[in-house]
Length: 187
Image (cartoon, rainbow, N blue to C red):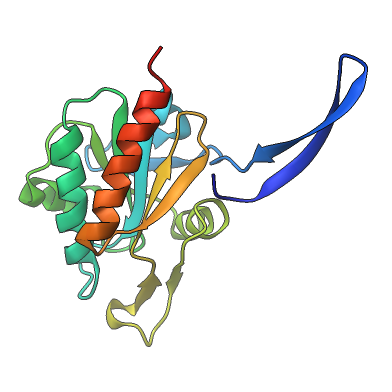
């Protein structure tokens, strides 16, 4: 598991036991391409892949979306899997723009949500919780710098892996790890 770990000491059967507690994704509140409110609870009992993008991105986003579409197609209809793409250009990427973008990608239903919201909250969630870069940068193409990472999150909202979302090899590894993670939840 990735993320910041905190050592927590508790007393078990009269003995002090120190255990690692993994960073988990805190609650959040954004709006999807359908105009619905999306919170961390929307993802309860699901593993999910998170990423950060913007619809007018001239550099890595088109590659990322082609790769994430492979994940979508492979896990389509699996009720335990979701995809969550956060726009980092909420001023431009309105609900209507995200809806059109999803349609153009061939995404239907609510398994892959494209979310928008308060820009600072999105950037903060990206940097402090998902540990990826998402920030305004006037020197970057499109005015924003962001990571091409796909972040795999388990049902306990712990980050289990970070993958290069711009390459087939990175996404092949992500999908293999998703299968392994799903198998962990089988009785």
